[in-house]
Picture 1: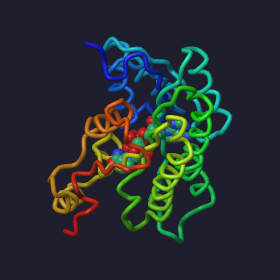
Picture 2: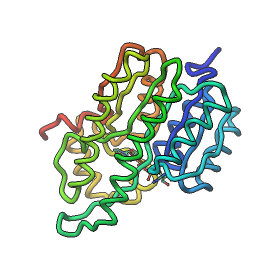
Picture 3: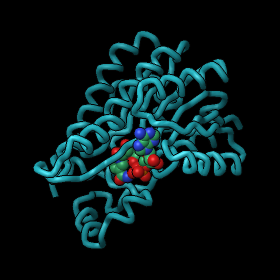
Picture 4: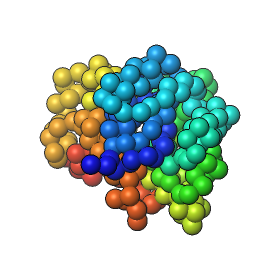
Length: 250
Ligand SMILES: NC(=O)c1ccc[n+]([C@@H]2O[C@H](COP(=O)([O-])OP(=O)(O)OC[C@H]3O[C@@H](n4cnc5c(N)ncnc54)[C@H](O)[C@@H]3O)[C@@H](O)[C@H]2O)c1
């Protein structure tokens, strides 16, 4: 049976770990050729090895996804090698949780450079490469809709990601390019599991209507929906995939 993304060409940024890795593997399992970007080349290579071991097709694409020329080269390179470019998932992030008085210029530049600027450049490149339409998926966060301590930049830039998603959907819609975002709640990537204490988990579960944290697979399934033709009339939206926590007043 043909996969839902058979023959499509996709790029996933920050796909060496966590959510990006899960999305890259899901897309490849559904027949896409996946460009696996990460600035950690070894991590990207590990994802590609896992995809190939499962019978899928992927390319190792190391590089800094916050840099305009790098992102452009990744996108246009994939388009040139495969004769088409259909899907990009802007997932890469570098995150620091810091009190307002402790924020340095360096951490501000790095966090916004990859979490906001990189998405701008990726959408620009995709708009050039998606000659026959396509799907752009930006990974936001439930933090886009919440106020969180020590997270002024993170909350602000993720809210910005939902805004640029709406604006890009309006401008690119007439060309058949859909632009959507996913806002995950706490999702059990290696890093998140290492960061959460049992007390923090208990507190989050008490606030989460579905009483569990997210799995990478939960986010990958949402990304597959937004990447595939099953969402062909969906654009400009931010899909919460969060067990209900964002709208809970518990
Ligand atoms: N895990 C969660 O609970 C959670 C919740 C909400 C939103 N998110 C969002 O999901 C996305 C993925 O998060 P994750 O938890 O899987 O993170 P992660 O840290 O596990 O993975 C992020 C990957 O991005 C890569 N990366 C960082 N900067 C890069 C750059 N400049 N160029 C290329 N690659 C770069 C890292 O090397 C890493 O492999 C992020 O946008 C994050 O904000 C995660």
